[in-house]
Structures are given as structure tokens and as C-alpha cells.
Image 1: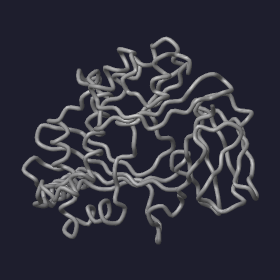
Image 2: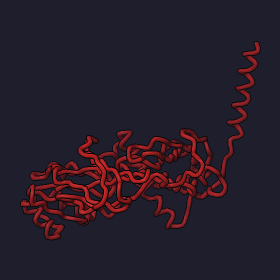
Image 3: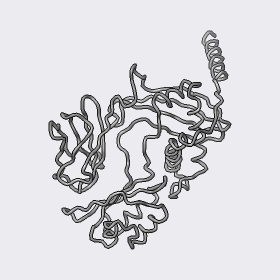
Image 4: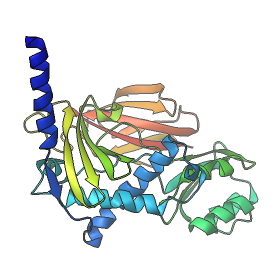
Length: 331
């Protein structure tokens, strides 16, 4: 009988907590600069959802605007609660959390035989290449040429291109990859981990999960903290709780990260790393995650790459307890 009473009292307490969950009134509009800062997030969350759920729009180059607008309103409603909802202060003001970066929506690159007539057109900066498939993509998506880098060693060239807006790149990279003379065509996938947002679109609300990661994030983050907020379509929000690793005192954005730049990119015999102090350790991995070389750079800032086969690689460095990661292409 005492056990039954305890269960009954626990049920009343649980009902009371749920019934008294606080609803915050917000606004789903914001200045254009704020909208612009969340546009990639809204588009990426919709694209990610369509791919994960194998929705019909996953095969479309265009990202569904209606769904993107729905997620945008949810993101803005949380943004507008800073100073009112403590969780919003944490994810917006303290950590400024945005979606991590995958799937990519603008940049793609490919390697192809540099002697092909249409590649020679690209080499001259001409976006009317004479290759029907590529020209159709360039015209439809207003694609620009970021870089064309020939390789005298392998007889190939590396081409980096960018669309003018956010698109589902996976819907067309296979078409370029299938062209005769093309070795590969891929999107610029981000490695590692970091702050992120996920979204579930429901009948009356969007459930947003914000996460902040720290501790070896180039390898995926050892620690993560999560905040779940329901953003209702009437522009009211409900904080559902937080979970995961406990935030340690003094933890700030980027405390364990370091920004690095790698050049020349593409490279031949070596790469130069700018950003970290000298004396950093490094690790080079291929696109399969296999470690190709690791060591310590002491003085020059240069890392030899002549031994690498042509392709795309990831460089991870560690300096004074902080880590950074960047991709590079070996010609």
C-alpha cells in the first residue's frame, strides 16, 4: 500500500511539473541581418531532414522553401527570447549556436583530365565549356569558378566551384562524377564536430535541439550539452530541458579550438600551415579516415606532401592543448 501511495504521489508531482511548464511568448520576425545569419541553418536543417527521411524532395536540387520558412520562424522565435528564457541566452548569446555545416550547400569540387576540351575552357576561365551536363548545371544554378589548379605530375586538374545560393548539391554531383575523364566530384564535407542544431517538424511546432561540443572536436567532440526547445507556430516557445555533459566553469566558445589555414591548396611537395605556434603535432588522414602520416613540426611551418597520392586529405593539428582541422588537395 505505501508503494501504491508513493506511485500516486509521484504521478501527481509529474503531472504538476508538466502542467506548470512555462510558455514564453515571442516573435517570429527579426531584422534582415538576423534572418541572413540563420538562413544557412534553416535551409540545412530542411535539407538534412529530407535526406534522413528519404522524402521526395531529397532528389531535388531545390531546397523546399515552405519548410525552410517554417524552420526559420522557429529559429527566430528562440533568438527573440534572449533576456527572457535562460536557455535562449545560453544557446544564442553565450554560445551563438548554428548548424555544424553538413550537408554542404554551395561548394563542390572535382578532379578531371586537364586535356579535355571542356576542361581547357575552364582553365581559360570560360564557364561556357561545351560540356552539356556541366554547362546546364552552371547556367541553372549560376555557378562560379573559384579555382582551377592544374597538376603537371598527374595530368589532371582540380576545379573548385560555388553556387550562388543554397542547393542540394548531392542531387547533381553524381552527374558530374559520371562524365568521361572525371576522377571524382564531391561536396566539401566538414570533418569533426562542434556546435549544432537539429529540427523535427511537427503538426503544431518545430522541436529544436541545440548542442554545444567541446574537447577534441576535430575528432567529433568528447563532451556535448543539449538544449531542447519547442517552438510553436503561434510564436510561443517551451523549454523542454537540457542534458548531456555538464558545462564546466569558464568554458567559452572556441577555448579548445584553433583556426588554421593551409596553402598552397591544391599542393605539390608541401603545405604551409598558418595559425598555430611552432612546435605543433599533426596528423594527415584520407577521405576514408585512415591515418597516412603523423609527426611534429618544429620550425618551418611546412609539412611535406610529395609522398601523397593525388586526392583530398584532412589535416589535424594540435598546439598548446588546442586543436584545428582543415582539408587540402594533393595534386
